[in-house]
Length: 332
Image (cartoon, helix red, strand yellow):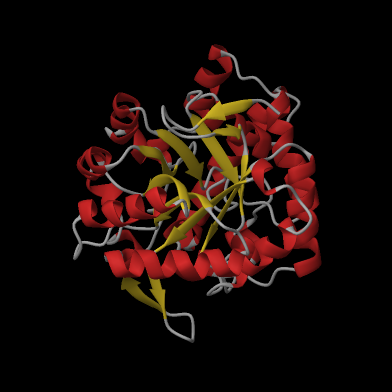
């Protein structure tokens, strides 16, 4: 698999990474054996970047990753960890804590759960408006100097926060949603990343399965994050968005590829400084996603896709009101 560098100061990564959240949280039950097999299959296929968070299943995801990496060479894997989201025992969201003490405590617990001596990329999951970003990044920089963290990343922040953070310590990458139907990064954020030499790890490249080609109207109202809290999966929004997917399906058929492969290839085509994260929870979905490596979209293909799936035609925001309020990236 080809590699891409995460920013001017970050590490090399395989050009597609694996996001692990769905193996522990938010998308309904997951099979532990299949989750482990999927991570192993990803590593065997050349995937190097594995993304987790200490709040994914309240530690479950990190423990799963620890078990998946047992017997593997740690130096051949990039472990990206998000922190800061606070949760109650029943799983409810309590807010964000990116204070320096919380930064270091969270890192200590993650290192223990992961069974590793270092985290390759450590990042706050969201901006904590109570704590200056300089203080949060400064605390992670202390961990870098101590050898516990290799690189600093950010997630879902806007240009001003990027600049302030980067002035304290070089930022390797920004993790942010980016797909054919989630284009907010193009309103100044991507340009700022490129100006500062910050890479992008793009999550939600299939919009949580909405543009995977596998979602259907019959799944409306499923009792996971999508049906309960994502406006794009609700009511008339879902039907309007699935109509766009059918247009995408027609383009994919002409390219002899699946809908998911075209959607991932589209993100890959937006720049060599972007690494898409796929959220596959099974080996079957992983194999399909990795097929995007073999698909190169021409300028004519990209123009056809732009006409078939214009971003302004998307119905509904990508998050509900509570989560949306925590997106510094949406103020850009």
